[in-house]
Length: 212
Image 1 (cartoon, rainbow, N blue to C red):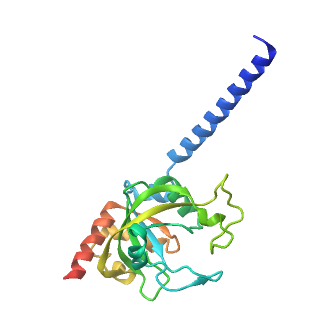
Image 2 (spheres, rainbow, N blue to C red):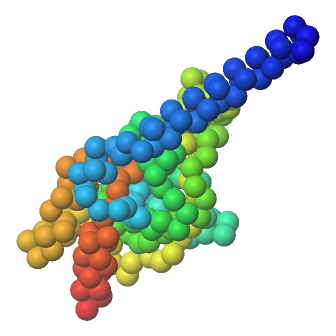
């Protein structure tokens, strides 16, 4: 074998080794659950996602998005973009999966609370709003070749007849023990939060009671 062929073979070998190292590093990272998910001690297939239903202007653009805006979106689907918190970003990028349920939460308004249900129809992908200099949540440090932020697509499922307010959820804690460790109560600023199956079931029961 010539020296040239040996060099090419060595280069290919190094390239493959580097790719394997990167893949193993990523797999190792995913195998280490975030502390917040570990603390819930249940598999997660539901997420509470916060959006602002009232007008708020950022860089000249209104960033409001209510459950009614989701309903009126094309195919009743939207890209859940603009998340600029690393913990929430990690959930969007690595842990939120196709068909996971979403509790659509109205935030930063007079009566915050859960407005309805949606579902995930596309798993994590680079948040293109971060690349757009005209977008309210543009981030010059996020590049298409090395994206810093991620989004998922969510689709409307149904709107609750009556919004389940944050105040109501807190009042129901005595009746529904599963609600006691809701991330919503301890991490109020986190815009994407895991919800356990027992918490989801409690919330749907509360929704049924509010219909009566």
